[in-house]
Length: 583
Image 1 (cartoon, rainbow, N blue to C red):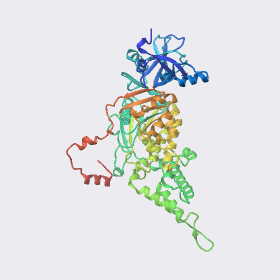
Image 2: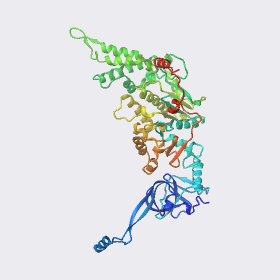
Image 3: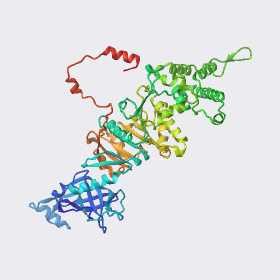
Image 4: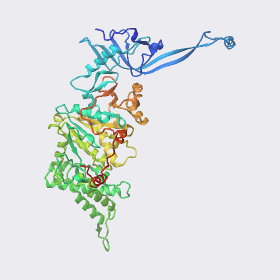
């Protein structure tokens, strides 16, 4: 059985230079050079091997002028003088046609089934003067069908169609996509949200999939196949609604609490940290003693998620701030007198602000010892209808603490997964939409952002051991933590127009695919370069649109301006702003 059948019309040229994965092919005629297109696939015969071909992607097509001289080589001074004297002697221009390509895999016959099989490994490199052929027409279709058939397995995820051959379906390996983490990157309007929704739609069909979407703008709130949870805004405090997700303050660990309350630039910050921590430990200990939780009491730490009363902590800090101690003749100010005034103002300001009500004004039922298990059950449960996909809407969370809150949810998910019995642990994936807003590069960032970044970096480095995967989605990859992006071994890159963003994505790719990355700014909407462990061949693909589209469609300004005007209800909008509710 022949894998490829080439004739003269497929011939491109002969190999003239080989460097690991890069190959230069010399093309003899301009006619043959016109067959070559950047991004096109080629096949090169392996030396001494029957029916085994190397597959490459064309990176560059080069036509270089070369000046030849009819007099031949000039060896002596007299030759040069004669050359200068001969005014009728003309130089003749010729060209050197070169195609530069990158090797991406091997196609050979499987010894067991005698059927073609594609592998990304490169056991050999082509020999000098080896033939190179263009994959097109029936040969291209045959190869792309081979990729589709090999990619379609019981654990495959249909992502779309190959741009080079629209008839061939493109698949990703669902296991490898999430095992090694992934990033989905693209400029505004490139089709990121639709790509995410397409992946979610397919995952929702699996009986026990478990994907949790961090939705910052309510883009995914209309997906019918998902369970929707929402961090409540000021107008929803005190309401009884199964979709509301209160996150009581005692779930925060010491670093997160300190980032929220304590200003590290203050002179007395170290005293504030010490006194605050001591007060929290005392209150947590009281809770455990009242419930007779002896085993927990012997092992708990400052970071243990134990309910405690923030009001009692404030009372203790106020006592220290106003304390008077006996002196030699009269009472004098205590060691912390007046040093916690600003801290107390900040704490009182936060806990009375309704924007932070989901933390400090949660119902009493959310402040019980068993409340954390109930909260995590709602987020992690995948056994009920429409529970495989959970969308958590963070749009009501104030921007100053958004990194802390998203980092809190991610940390709790990871820790509960870590402490779950191995044989009962079910893998989950965290879809981090708009990641640049809460996972920025660490240099010079504020403490709130630092806490979130550290939580996610831990998941990026160790999460796969415990079945926690990340899909990082961002329109500004240059602003996202380098540590987190470097752990994403699968990259789905849509159109990127910013030079810094393009450079960031190129750093995530092997050097051998640099030519493929040069197409990032010219990709169409919904078109992506997919590279990584989850794809058989690094390729340019057109991602299939989802049946249910997210609420992120770009407004057609000119079309909207062409419609007869309708007066907006400004008064209602102002009232909505005042009561913090669009409903």
